[in-house]
Length: 154
Length: 157
Image (cartoon, rainbow over all chains, first blue to last red; front, side, top):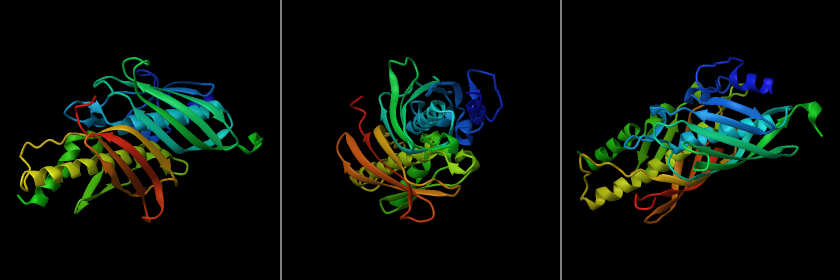
């Protein structure tokens, strides 16, 4: 998975703090997302709490949009982690259920699992949480279109 | 202050209530009760630098905030009418919270300005169902659409 790590992080290791910055994905990097781990179709990302990403200044709760961006990135990363020969992916659709507000001041973690990859489509589910994985902030279910390297075509 | 002025101030003030609006750089325009949201292009909205294409997360967040803004605007117009045409100085809208949203990504988002509008399909006492569409160069060529439910009252957790 060295290739994948390089692709997402721009080959730049940033060991400060937890995980590495997603420098290869400009918008994710701007939000401050960190890649914690990838393996066998699974990915774990972390979004550090930031005042810039708040959706309601009165409460300090992160915007639902920020959670959406985190889950979308995490799902896409899990697709890449599912098969070594995937060239690119694009989100087809993404459904998000918002279970509870992200706890203000806390980092948000996301875990995505790509559970099926066909010739052209990958199916992924994901969960995001702040305090405990068993108390999800949001869950996601997504389909991605995938482009494979030619030699990997079935 | 004119009725329109008070309402415009509310829309402009939203970015103070929602810091994420400033992060994405969103601006809003009102024609009657219809809000058009714009996400001006900037490099850090990119998700795929090779194409390049906008990050699906940025587009998704933009659609979601467009829905929230339309709902807040509708509430403010109704409150304004109920109060005889003016909003109190300390008026603070209740922020609608997403319950669930489904995003369809129809075309790759180019490195261009993106526009969006929300259509409130049904607004009940507690829940509003909203459809949102985003486009770039041509209104009919949507780059993304979404539909979702938003919780309007604080009563239900």
